[in-house]
Image: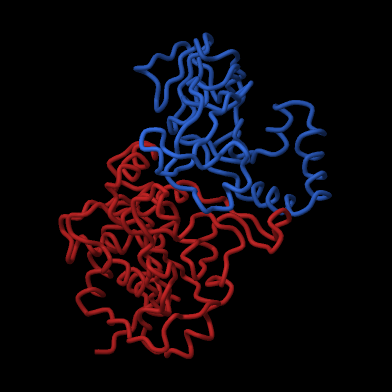
Length: 247
Length: 173
């Protein structure tokens, strides 16, 4: 089978596969791709997953404090987060870019709750729509949340994966590093090596299982309709889902 | 609040922690070994924040999250700027967070007091003005100009609103 799909659809499908039935899974602000992934998982393999999409109707809470308490208790199974930079140690940066921390070239809004949730959720998955040497780097310019911590430090969970439009990485907790896991359609190991700013940790990787017809159809029909009806990133859903040309 | 410090889950290993002298890593006092971040509690002399509504006694209805309640509970003095002054606000009639007048020292009637940021339920961020602000922040000279134009050279809040808030927002059709 050879379907056409865009990066947003591909990533939403890859993220949806990480959602486990019966668990509580969440994404934060500006998270249209994970939001679509969560709804897709619920429509397909995880009908009893509890979803929390912050700033949407899909949250039981009226304040983020309540959500933070849930995460702190260790009740959050999966959290989707993004970063401007992600490094080989699973650290991400949402604060600033530039070699000199006192004189950054660019500043961002910061990590908000991520500096806690990344340590509290059982599994955290970083999604990044740009896979280049400037986004996947050896070492982030500023650590907003750390991939690993010494054993005595209170921590309830770990990074699990990094998902981009080109490949999946898994986090090896023994080595405390990201390892190339699978490579998406149309690309090979050399392509990934060229656009990744750190060592891949393996000399070869299998292809990523492709989106199925069922996944794509459900995403483009059921999920799209739901996102529009509930005003959950509705504009993004209209533009991206079912529009294979959109990159 | 009045507590001395709070334990925090997370933040260990971040650069944020390196830049804060009010947060340290400490052992759990009960088991003597589990490490987590401990932050010294803030005790602001003055807290100033914007609300949708306040009454003349200083009761406040703040249509967004409850963090502002904590802020009012922690500070020595509390000044509220409010979009609208109404007759009476109680915990029951407040929309969103309620801050009782016992915590509040002053209320200032300040329509468009959040501008160029937004005020939940009333107006969105002013994207053009925000863009101008962000561009101005790039270096000290441009920021000094921005500060001069938007703050120092503006005689009053009314003058600010007149000059910088879009006319259509001030006088909706």
